[in-house]
Length: 339
Image (cartoon, rainbow, N blue to C red; front, side):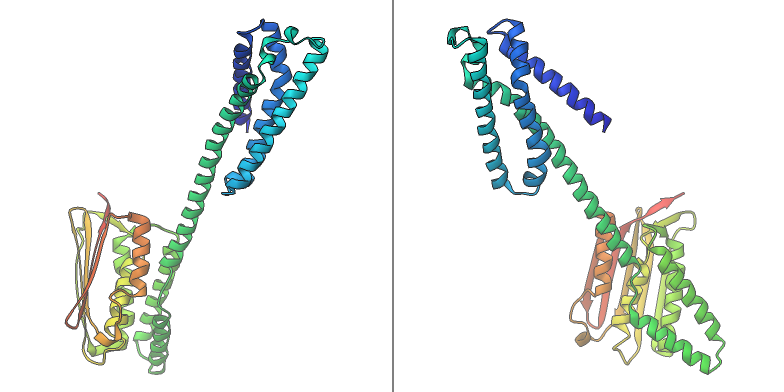
Protein backbone atom coordinates (compact mmCIF):
# COMPACT_ATOMS: atom_id res chain seq x y z
CA UNK A 1 0.00 0.00 0.00
CA UNK A 2 2.80 2.43 0.93
CA UNK A 3 4.69 1.52 -2.25
CA UNK A 4 1.63 2.29 -4.39
CA UNK A 5 1.24 5.65 -2.62
CA UNK A 6 4.87 6.54 -3.32
CA UNK A 7 4.43 5.54 -6.99
CA UNK A 8 1.45 7.89 -7.36
CA UNK A 9 3.33 10.78 -5.73
CA UNK A 10 6.37 10.26 -7.96
CA UNK A 11 4.33 9.80 -11.14
CA UNK A 12 2.20 12.92 -10.75
CA UNK A 13 5.16 15.01 -9.62
CA UNK A 14 6.98 13.98 -12.79
CA UNK A 15 3.83 14.41 -14.92
CA UNK A 16 3.06 17.91 -13.65
CA UNK A 17 6.70 18.95 -14.07
CA UNK A 18 6.58 17.68 -17.66
CA UNK A 19 3.35 19.58 -18.20
CA UNK A 20 4.96 22.79 -16.89
CA UNK A 21 7.88 22.29 -19.28
CA UNK A 22 5.58 21.70 -22.27
CA UNK A 23 3.43 24.73 -21.49
CA UNK A 24 6.27 26.96 -20.35
CA UNK A 25 8.24 26.92 -23.57
CA UNK A 26 5.58 29.16 -25.15
CA UNK A 27 5.07 31.46 -22.15
CA UNK A 28 6.75 32.43 -18.89
CA UNK A 29 7.16 29.84 -16.14
CA UNK A 30 4.79 31.56 -13.75
CA UNK A 31 1.97 31.20 -16.27
CA UNK A 32 3.01 27.59 -16.94
CA UNK A 33 2.78 26.71 -13.24
CA UNK A 34 -0.53 28.56 -12.95
CA UNK A 35 -2.06 26.82 -15.96
CA UNK A 36 -0.78 23.41 -14.85
CA UNK A 37 -2.39 23.82 -11.44
CA UNK A 38 -5.65 25.02 -13.04
CA UNK A 39 -5.93 22.27 -15.67
CA UNK A 40 -4.25 19.32 -13.86
CA UNK A 41 -7.42 18.33 -11.91
CA UNK A 42 -8.97 17.38 -15.26
CA UNK A 43 -6.09 14.99 -16.03
CA UNK A 44 -5.85 13.58 -12.53
CA UNK A 45 -9.61 13.14 -12.18
CA UNK A 46 -9.91 11.44 -15.57
CA UNK A 47 -6.95 9.16 -14.85
CA UNK A 48 -8.32 7.90 -11.53
CA UNK A 49 -11.86 7.57 -12.85
CA UNK A 50 -10.58 5.32 -15.63
CA UNK A 51 -8.14 3.26 -13.56
CA UNK A 52 -10.17 2.87 -10.37
CA UNK A 53 -13.56 2.31 -11.97
CA UNK A 54 -13.60 1.57 -15.68
CA UNK A 55 -10.58 -0.77 -15.82
CA UNK A 56 -11.75 -3.12 -13.09
CA UNK A 57 -15.46 -3.05 -13.90
CA UNK A 58 -15.31 -3.22 -17.69
CA UNK A 59 -11.91 -3.73 -19.34
CA UNK A 60 -10.57 -6.54 -17.11
CA UNK A 61 -13.93 -8.32 -17.35
CA UNK A 62 -13.87 -8.18 -21.14
CA UNK A 63 -16.69 -5.63 -21.52
CA UNK A 64 -14.73 -3.65 -24.11
CA UNK A 65 -17.64 -1.91 -25.81
CA UNK A 66 -18.93 -0.39 -22.58
CA UNK A 67 -15.37 0.54 -21.56
CA UNK A 68 -14.59 2.49 -24.73
CA UNK A 69 -18.02 4.13 -24.67
CA UNK A 70 -17.32 5.54 -21.20
CA UNK A 71 -13.86 6.63 -22.35
CA UNK A 72 -15.55 8.70 -25.05
CA UNK A 73 -17.82 10.21 -22.39
CA UNK A 74 -14.82 11.12 -20.24
CA UNK A 75 -12.96 12.67 -23.19
CA UNK A 76 -15.99 14.78 -24.16
CA UNK A 77 -16.61 15.85 -20.55
CA UNK A 78 -12.92 16.70 -20.05
CA UNK A 79 -12.84 18.78 -23.23
CA UNK A 80 -15.98 20.60 -22.06
CA UNK A 81 -14.34 21.40 -18.70
CA UNK A 82 -11.21 22.55 -20.54
CA UNK A 83 -13.31 24.96 -22.61
CA UNK A 84 -15.14 26.12 -19.48
CA UNK A 85 -11.90 26.88 -17.60
CA UNK A 86 -10.41 28.49 -20.68
CA UNK A 87 -13.48 30.70 -20.99
CA UNK A 88 -12.99 31.77 -17.36
CA UNK A 89 -9.38 32.70 -18.16
CA UNK A 90 -10.58 34.63 -21.22
CA UNK A 91 -13.07 36.59 -19.10
CA UNK A 92 -11.29 37.12 -15.77
CA UNK A 93 -7.60 37.01 -16.75
CA UNK A 94 -7.50 38.36 -20.33
CA UNK A 95 -10.45 40.75 -19.84
CA UNK A 96 -12.17 39.53 -23.04
CA UNK A 97 -9.01 40.11 -25.10
CA UNK A 98 -7.83 37.00 -26.90
CA UNK A 99 -4.33 38.39 -27.47
CA UNK A 100 -3.83 38.79 -23.72
CA UNK A 101 -4.53 35.13 -23.01
CA UNK A 102 -1.55 32.90 -22.17
CA UNK A 103 -0.15 31.36 -25.39
CA UNK A 104 -0.85 27.80 -24.22
CA UNK A 105 -4.57 28.55 -23.81
CA UNK A 106 -4.87 29.93 -27.34
CA UNK A 107 -4.49 26.44 -28.84
CA UNK A 108 -7.05 24.29 -27.03
CA UNK A 109 -6.35 21.13 -29.04
CA UNK A 110 -2.63 21.12 -28.24
CA UNK A 111 -3.35 21.86 -24.58
CA UNK A 112 -5.92 19.04 -24.44
CA UNK A 113 -3.55 16.54 -26.09
CA UNK A 114 -0.79 17.52 -23.66
CA UNK A 115 -3.02 16.97 -20.65
CA UNK A 116 -4.38 13.65 -21.91
CA UNK A 117 -0.93 12.29 -22.74
CA UNK A 118 -0.38 12.21 -18.98
CA UNK A 119 -3.69 10.40 -18.53
CA UNK A 120 -2.88 7.88 -21.26
CA UNK A 121 0.51 7.06 -19.79
CA UNK A 122 -0.93 6.63 -16.28
CA UNK A 123 -3.78 4.43 -17.54
CA UNK A 124 -1.33 2.31 -19.56
CA UNK A 125 0.86 1.69 -16.50
CA UNK A 126 -2.15 0.86 -14.32
CA UNK A 127 -3.62 -1.40 -17.02
CA UNK A 128 -0.43 -3.45 -17.19
CA UNK A 129 -0.38 -3.71 -13.40
CA UNK A 130 -4.02 -4.80 -13.21
CA UNK A 131 -3.65 -7.31 -16.04
CA UNK A 132 -0.60 -8.77 -14.34
CA UNK A 133 -2.43 -8.92 -11.02
CA UNK A 134 -5.47 -10.56 -12.64
CA UNK A 135 -3.19 -13.06 -14.41
CA UNK A 136 -1.44 -13.93 -11.14
CA UNK A 137 -4.77 -14.38 -9.38
CA UNK A 138 -6.00 -16.61 -12.20
CA UNK A 139 -2.81 -18.67 -12.12
CA UNK A 140 -3.06 -19.00 -8.35
CA UNK A 141 -6.69 -20.07 -8.63
CA UNK A 142 -5.81 -22.65 -11.28
CA UNK A 143 -2.89 -23.87 -9.19
CA UNK A 144 -5.08 -24.17 -6.10
CA UNK A 145 -7.72 -26.04 -8.10
CA UNK A 146 -5.08 -28.33 -9.59
CA UNK A 147 -3.59 -29.02 -6.16
CA UNK A 148 -7.04 -29.74 -4.75
CA UNK A 149 -7.75 -32.13 -7.62
CA UNK A 150 -4.35 -33.74 -7.11
CA UNK A 151 -5.08 -34.32 -3.43
CA UNK A 152 -8.40 -35.86 -4.41
CA UNK A 153 -6.84 -38.10 -7.05
CA UNK A 154 -4.17 -39.31 -4.63
CA UNK A 155 -6.77 -40.46 -2.13
CA UNK A 156 -8.97 -42.31 -4.62
CA UNK A 157 -9.32 -46.06 -4.31
CA UNK A 158 -11.77 -48.29 -6.09
CA UNK A 159 -14.74 -48.90 -3.72
CA UNK A 160 -14.97 -52.53 -4.86
CA UNK A 161 -11.58 -53.14 -3.29
CA UNK A 162 -12.76 -52.01 0.15
CA UNK A 163 -15.98 -53.97 -0.18
CA UNK A 164 -14.19 -57.16 -1.20
CA UNK A 165 -11.52 -56.75 1.50
CA UNK A 166 -14.14 -56.35 4.23
CA UNK A 167 -16.02 -59.31 2.80
CA UNK A 168 -12.82 -61.38 2.97
CA UNK A 169 -12.30 -60.24 6.54
CA UNK A 170 -15.81 -61.34 7.39
CA UNK A 171 -15.20 -64.81 5.92
CA UNK A 172 -11.84 -65.18 7.69
CA UNK A 173 -13.43 -64.10 10.95
CA UNK A 174 -16.15 -66.76 10.61
CA UNK A 175 -13.48 -69.35 9.89
CA UNK A 176 -11.40 -68.04 12.82
CA UNK A 177 -8.46 -67.89 10.45
CA UNK A 178 -5.06 -66.69 11.63
CA UNK A 179 -4.97 -64.47 8.55
CA UNK A 180 -7.69 -62.18 9.90
CA UNK A 181 -5.43 -60.09 12.23
CA UNK A 182 -2.84 -59.72 9.47
CA UNK A 183 -5.52 -58.62 7.01
CA UNK A 184 -6.81 -55.99 9.48
CA UNK A 185 -3.26 -54.71 10.05
CA UNK A 186 -2.47 -54.41 6.34
CA UNK A 187 -5.80 -52.77 5.58
CA UNK A 188 -5.23 -50.30 8.41
CA UNK A 189 -1.76 -49.48 7.09
CA UNK A 190 -3.13 -49.00 3.59
CA UNK A 191 -5.95 -46.68 4.64
CA UNK A 192 -3.60 -44.68 6.86
CA UNK A 193 -1.18 -44.33 3.95
CA UNK A 194 -3.94 -43.19 1.59
CA UNK A 195 -4.99 -40.44 4.01
CA UNK A 196 -1.42 -39.27 4.61
CA UNK A 197 -0.47 -39.50 0.91
CA UNK A 198 -2.95 -36.73 0.08
CA UNK A 199 -0.77 -34.29 2.02
CA UNK A 200 2.47 -35.02 0.15
CA UNK A 201 3.64 -34.46 -3.39
CA UNK A 202 6.38 -37.07 -3.09
CA UNK A 203 6.95 -40.15 -0.95
CA UNK A 204 9.84 -42.57 -0.64
CA UNK A 205 9.60 -45.29 -3.24
CA UNK A 206 10.41 -47.91 -0.57
CA UNK A 207 7.36 -46.82 1.38
CA UNK A 208 5.18 -46.92 -1.72
CA UNK A 209 6.45 -50.42 -2.55
CA UNK A 210 5.68 -51.62 0.96
CA UNK A 211 2.10 -50.37 0.74
CA UNK A 212 1.82 -51.81 -2.77
CA UNK A 213 2.81 -55.21 -1.36
CA UNK A 214 0.16 -54.87 1.35
CA UNK A 215 -2.37 -54.06 -1.34
CA UNK A 216 -1.31 -57.10 -3.36
CA UNK A 217 -1.64 -59.28 -0.27
CA UNK A 218 -5.19 -58.05 0.36
CA UNK A 219 -6.20 -58.61 -3.25
CA UNK A 220 -4.50 -62.02 -3.52
CA UNK A 221 -6.78 -63.40 -0.80
CA UNK A 222 -9.63 -63.27 -3.32
CA UNK A 223 -7.92 -65.37 -5.96
CA UNK A 224 -5.79 -67.86 -3.98
CA UNK A 225 -4.34 -70.49 -6.37
CA UNK A 226 -5.72 -68.74 -9.45
CA UNK A 227 -3.20 -65.90 -9.07
CA UNK A 228 0.21 -66.12 -10.72
CA UNK A 229 2.16 -63.06 -9.58
CA UNK A 230 5.73 -62.12 -10.49
CA UNK A 231 7.55 -59.21 -8.91
CA UNK A 232 11.01 -57.97 -9.91
CA UNK A 233 11.98 -54.82 -8.03
CA UNK A 234 15.51 -53.50 -8.54
CA UNK A 235 15.91 -50.25 -6.59
CA UNK A 236 19.52 -49.45 -5.59
CA UNK A 237 19.84 -49.66 -1.79
CA UNK A 238 22.23 -46.69 -1.62
CA UNK A 239 19.65 -44.08 -2.67
CA UNK A 240 16.46 -42.79 -1.15
CA UNK A 241 14.23 -42.31 -4.16
CA UNK A 242 10.99 -40.34 -4.16
CA UNK A 243 7.97 -40.73 -6.42
CA UNK A 244 4.38 -39.38 -6.45
CA UNK A 245 2.21 -41.25 -3.93
CA UNK A 246 -0.44 -43.79 -4.96
CA UNK A 247 1.17 -44.33 -8.39
CA UNK A 248 2.16 -47.96 -7.82
CA UNK A 249 -1.03 -48.82 -5.94
CA UNK A 250 -3.19 -47.41 -8.74
CA UNK A 251 -1.26 -49.35 -11.38
CA UNK A 252 -1.53 -52.61 -9.45
CA UNK A 253 -5.19 -51.97 -8.71
CA UNK A 254 -5.73 -51.55 -12.45
CA UNK A 255 -4.01 -54.90 -13.04
CA UNK A 256 -6.35 -56.68 -10.63
CA UNK A 257 -9.45 -54.80 -11.75
CA UNK A 258 -9.07 -55.57 -15.46
CA UNK A 259 -6.95 -58.69 -15.17
CA UNK A 260 -8.77 -60.68 -12.53
CA UNK A 261 -12.25 -59.34 -11.85
CA UNK A 262 -13.81 -60.80 -15.03
CA UNK A 263 -11.39 -63.67 -15.49
CA UNK A 264 -12.48 -67.11 -14.31
CA UNK A 265 -9.17 -68.75 -15.25
CA UNK A 266 -5.57 -68.23 -14.18
CA UNK A 267 -4.76 -64.61 -13.47
CA UNK A 268 -1.23 -63.59 -14.47
CA UNK A 269 0.28 -60.33 -13.23
CA UNK A 270 3.88 -59.36 -13.86
CA UNK A 271 5.42 -56.30 -12.16
CA UNK A 272 8.93 -55.09 -12.99
CA UNK A 273 10.56 -51.98 -11.49
CA UNK A 274 14.08 -50.68 -11.98
CA UNK A 275 16.11 -47.45 -12.09
CA UNK A 276 18.04 -46.45 -15.19
CA UNK A 277 19.65 -43.07 -15.99
CA UNK A 278 17.87 -41.32 -13.10
CA UNK A 279 14.52 -42.57 -14.39
CA UNK A 280 12.21 -45.01 -12.66
CA UNK A 281 10.84 -47.61 -15.04
CA UNK A 282 7.68 -49.48 -14.16
CA UNK A 283 6.54 -52.29 -16.43
CA UNK A 284 3.38 -54.26 -15.76
CA UNK A 285 1.40 -56.83 -17.66
CA UNK A 286 -1.75 -58.71 -16.79
CA UNK A 287 -4.16 -61.11 -18.43
CA UNK A 288 -7.54 -59.73 -19.32
CA UNK A 289 -10.76 -60.73 -21.02
CA UNK A 290 -10.83 -58.72 -24.27
CA UNK A 291 -14.61 -58.22 -24.28
CA UNK A 292 -14.52 -56.76 -20.75
CA UNK A 293 -12.05 -54.00 -21.57
CA UNK A 294 -13.40 -51.57 -24.13
CA UNK A 295 -10.74 -48.93 -23.61
CA UNK A 296 -6.97 -49.48 -23.20
CA UNK A 297 -6.76 -47.02 -20.30
CA UNK A 298 -9.06 -47.21 -17.29
CA UNK A 299 -10.15 -44.48 -14.91
CA UNK A 300 -7.29 -45.26 -12.52
CA UNK A 301 -4.68 -44.74 -15.24
CA UNK A 302 -6.39 -41.53 -16.38
CA UNK A 303 -6.03 -40.29 -12.80
CA UNK A 304 -2.34 -41.20 -12.92
CA UNK A 305 -1.95 -39.20 -16.12
CA UNK A 306 -3.53 -36.16 -14.47
CA UNK A 307 -1.15 -36.42 -11.53
CA UNK A 308 1.90 -36.84 -13.75
CA UNK A 309 0.82 -33.99 -16.06
CA UNK A 310 0.60 -31.72 -13.02
CA UNK A 311 3.89 -32.82 -11.46
CA UNK A 312 6.09 -33.48 -14.52
CA UNK A 313 4.46 -31.78 -17.50
CA UNK A 314 5.88 -33.55 -20.55
CA UNK A 315 8.85 -35.06 -18.71
CA UNK A 316 7.43 -38.54 -18.37
CA UNK A 317 6.27 -41.39 -20.61
CA UNK A 318 3.23 -43.64 -20.21
CA UNK A 319 2.52 -46.35 -22.75
CA UNK A 320 -0.19 -48.99 -22.81
CA UNK A 321 -0.93 -51.68 -25.36
CA UNK A 322 -2.91 -54.90 -25.74
CA UNK A 323 -1.27 -57.95 -27.22
CA UNK A 324 -3.15 -61.21 -27.35
CA UNK A 325 -4.70 -61.70 -23.93
CA UNK A 326 -2.17 -59.48 -22.16
CA UNK A 327 -2.44 -55.83 -21.26
CA UNK A 328 0.96 -54.09 -21.05
CA UNK A 329 1.82 -50.84 -19.29
CA UNK A 330 5.12 -49.01 -19.16
CA UNK A 331 5.68 -45.87 -17.11
CA UNK A 332 8.93 -43.89 -17.02
CA UNK A 333 9.20 -40.95 -14.62
CA UNK A 334 12.08 -38.83 -13.30
CA UNK A 335 13.29 -40.13 -9.99
CA UNK A 336 14.14 -37.75 -7.18
CA UNK A 337 17.09 -39.34 -5.44
CA UNK A 338 19.01 -38.29 -2.34
CA UNK A 339 22.39 -39.91 -1.84
